[in-house]
Length: 426
Image (tube, rainbow, N blue to C red; front, side, top):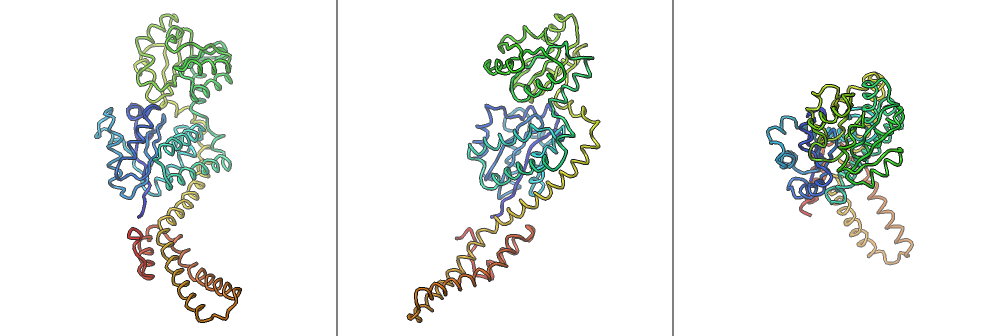
């Protein structure tokens, strides 16, 4: 039975942040969503990707059309967005295009900032969660692990990563444009995850020495604050410290705004209207977009960060072209493997049939040659086995390597010529 690889969802190219945040699977929802995914009839395997830039389901199925409908319903099931609104922004990749898209995502060629390193770690984490939940099987196991090796090749053989900055670095570069200098500024990190840590490192590199760190898990805030010689504050108290912060970076998994426009007004008044720079790196967003209407408060979200690195566009483009060539090579390699996987039942049946004929005929012959020594009998057995292998080599190789568009024809022809039952009948 032929299996098709699909990717259905939204990303930063197809949907604005206000749509992506309505679809996002926060950490507490992911395992339940994976369990639900396993119950969808057309879906044989599935992995959910939910990052700032994308909410996509990677699936393997025997019925592509039905699977697309089922996954569209699945994404809209949270009642945060209507199916009609979702379809307006939905991206669907099928077959080779789906494999190519996943490989490009892993290699950070489809990121808002090309070459940013975070996506590969995120991809590995989402695949691991799906594998633990039992929703990823043979096909997606191979596909995801191949995507990891593609990303490694791209980083090793091209300069894509060196020609770009991470989203965190892009955010800090924006801060440098807002303030003349950062050495005398204080930064507050709301959320102590990977994105906050990376942002803190970039802020440190640009001269900021004063950090305030808050997180729902206070021990994590203490740990990160210690690393940057900052001050940890309990999450329930962080609003009292906002007036001290010139740069505020939000990176939490909150389902509602942690910083509202009225609160921002109050903080700005307490700061005597000194400028504040806010970077919202989360999806769903942490900061109310209405804050951007307040004078002396500068708010940027993840969709705003893509334009920061335009200066390196030409260099990145040249390196990206090398990377795209690597992706195409690896797509071809994976496609040959997948074609071979579909041919496996026919190949196994063909080998079994020819081997049973060989053994039957060999036993008949040996029954008439009783005077043969054990060594001679073994030699005759080895000779007939080698003969069968040589005869089967060409047709089996062809079944493994032919174009998938002709797959059904060749497999049917092999079964017809050799009198093999349909694989599903065996």
